[in-house]
Each structure stands twice: as C-alpha cells, then as structure tokens.
Length: 225
Length: 368
Image (cartoon, rainbow over all chains, first blue to last red; front, side, top):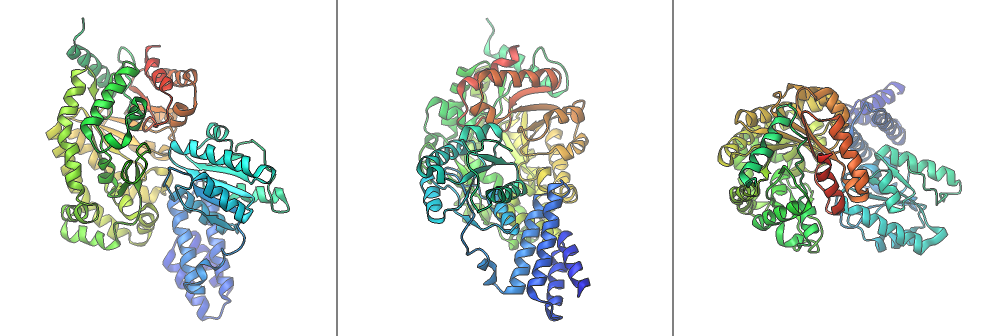
C-alpha cells in the first residue's frame, strides 16, 4: 500500500499522467482510502510547485500537474467532487481588471492557491472596480488579487485600489497585484504587494493570512516584494 | 538640402550596419507603437484598427512629430494580423469594446484535438482555409486588405526618408496552435499527445515557410518579424522547448534569411535560458528583439558577436517613468549593448498609455 502511495507521488512529480491515474485506480481497487490517494496526488503537485519555484520546472509543468490533480479528483470523487472543496467563505477575491481579458495567469495562480488550501473566489476577467468592491462586501475576503497583462491594466488597477480603499477604509483587504507588473507599477496603483509568478502569489497570500492570525491581513504596508 | 531619398539611404545604411554587427555613425532608433500612435494623435482606435491605410497615415504623422527616427518596425497594421497569428477571435474596439479601448486577442479553445488529424491527413492549407472561413468569419478576406495595402504603406514611409523595417510577421506552428487551442489546453497537448502535435507541426511548418518565402518575394521587405510569445523558454522545460520550439524557428529563420531578408526575432517574455541556442541562427543576418523580460545584458554577452540586438525600453518605464529615467536607461543600453550591433527600440510595443515626452526622450537619446 505504502509502495503504491509513493509511486503516485513520484508519478505526479514526474508529470506522468497515465501512470499516476492508473496508480490511483489500482489504489482504489486495493481498497486504499480515496482521500489518502488524493492526498498523495496533492503531495506530488506540491513537489511540482517546489521545482517550479527553484526554476527546475516551468509553467507547462504546473498546468499539467494541476490537470493531473483534477483528473485524479474526478476518478476518486466522480465529476461532482471537483468543485465541492471551493464552496466555503473565500479568503481571496481574484480577478483580471477592467479592460483586460487575459485569464491564463489568473487561472494558473488560482489553481496554485487552491492547491495550497486557499479558498479563492474567481470573479473573471475585464472586471470593473465596482464589481470587485461588491464581491469584497459580500464575502469580507481579507485579500484582493488583481491581475493584468496589458499596460492599460495599470489604470484599472489604480481605480480599483482607490475605490476599495475609499469605500472600505480600515476594513479593506490587503491588495496584491500580478501579471505585467513590477515595483513601480505597485507604487503607481497603490497596491500593497506585487507577485512575480503563481507560486510567489500563493505563498505571499498564505504568509499574509498567517500574519493576520485571525484571518484578516495587516493592511497598509507598502512594501512591494 | 538632404533629399528624402538620401536620408532614407543614410538611415538604411545605419540599420544594416548594426544588423551586420558593425558600428554605425550612431546607434539607429527603430520604434514601434501601433496603438500608442493612435492615442497620441487622439485618433479613435476603432476607426484605424481595421483600416490599414488610415493606420499607415497615423503612424507616419505620429512618428514624424515625435522625433527623428531611422526606421519604423511596422509601416502599417491591422488587428486581423493578430487573428492570423494565433488563429483566434478578437475583441475589437468599436465592435466589441468601447471605441478607444485597446484591441485584444480573445483566447478560447477554437481549435480542437481533431484538427491536428485534419492537418496531418488533409494538409495545413486546407485546414486553415476552412478554419478562417467558418470559425473566424472569413478572416482571409479581411486580412487580404492589410496585405494589399502594404506596398503603398511601404512607399509612403520611404518617401518620408524613413525605413519601413519589418512590415510582415510570421511565426512557428507552436504559436499558431497555442492560440487556437488556448494556452492551457495546448500545453497539456504537449504532454498528452506529443507525437500528434509534432506531426501536425511538421506539416504546418512547410506551408508557413512557403508563405514566408512568397511574402518576402512579393513585398521585398528589409526585414520581417519571426515572432515568439507563448513559446518563450520560461514557459517550457528544455526538453519540450528543444522539441516543439527551436527546430521550427531555425527552419523559418533560415528560409527568411535565404530570401535575403533580415529575421527579427521579436521575442516576448523570458528567453534567457536558451540564448545559447540562438547562436545556431545565421550570423549577422538576424535581430534579437526582447521585450524587457529577457536579460538583455546577458543576451549581449552570449549573442553580441553573433546577432544584432534591438530593444528594450520596458512598457512600464514608458508609461510610468520620467523623460530623465527613459534617457538614462536608453544611454545605458546604447553604451553597454551598443554601439556596435545594436538598434534602440522599445521592448515589444510602445504601450498605448506611454507618455509622449518619454517616447520623445527615447528617440532623442541616440544623439547623446
């Protein structure tokens, strides 16, 4: 049993989908707890993310590993199981800002965040500032992530940050931007932090949530990563 | 008084000297700012983005009022060019977006896994003709308008003494398929059905090479873009990059160079890992044009004696920086990447919200 579990981790970490899924099926047939099997897949994905962080793996590997997890989830839980883990109260509201319809960076980062156990509400692309505000009011999420891949996104980010700060005051979330951004853009938009890639963004959010302790981040730090 | 013709020859010579890795009298500046030029002139994006003649007029009007450039990368533009490159639908200002919003590629899964079989079994041209007609609303007809407008746009540019440097764009099957399939799906195809993807790429590259040759013969450009966006090293493992990306660039670049045309490697995102491979491309016949993400100083170190480098004033600096900051960055490039084998330009494209005074500072910086 232990051997099967180890093999699953190593197949996922090696981005070997067929092998990983076949091992999961074997495991189920042998009566191993489905959630234990899924946990091994998740461990494999974590190794992929660690390798990505170290520059040994690349975006394509992360995309594929995320899909292997999704596939395994379907095998173990059936098609309905896939969405069941994201029904809770979101810790992160995440969207691509107004005037920008790019979704790849956002989607990959959300998948990464969910693998790290974060509850994320995906509000889509080309999201106007008032919609972000509405979602923050509805959820009370402590983190707002804004993504943008075109330079027009800078102004949309700035408008969103302004509206959120003005409307929510001290109750506002910590605001993280990502995509085609850097420290200068972070200062320009008034965001609290910027993230350089999907794992950086996910780890930053986890750190912010831990710092907050009771679930709300300490807002107001202008330190960009 | 210097005539436009003499000015054109002087500037062309400056650019060609840089491409051949020589030291021109000064570093040439060859910018591109398709959407920026329209915003700068306060011309509605909706009016020009599907009308290449209007676009050419706007580019020339804008660029001549911003300073003295040696050349421009695109003498004309049409948003349908983007649709052809990534076989994708577009969000077009005035049609799908407010009149002054920037056009964008609307990436979705328009190409299916079965399409790889169609390409393998029935040929790339048949697949593409059908795809353009039925999935992209007769794209070919719209794109032809752009192709037909090019000779006049090129002549109008030359008549002003400006070099219409790289009027065309071509790219490898990876980019086309990636756009059609959507990036996530395509990346998964590389793992799940690699042999099928490669077989389709091998069919497609032959037609792409032939189209590039025909374009070079018909238009006789000085250079053409061989673009790279989603095939950047940062997205793929070396194993996948060496299989699905580089061999196809090598083939396409060689075909362009064989036609006597300079290949501009307009490479967005980060290619630093694989710069060494670019030394396999023809020496002194190509331009490596990174967007500000690849380490341009590393590129100089690795490629400096092999390929001319063009770039790479970053979009954020042009939008958010000051003229002094732009000037200082440009001088750093001119002095460290140049003065031999270097062309000054923005990274990728001047963003629509760049400050005109920053663009002017970039153009002016080549004078010292």
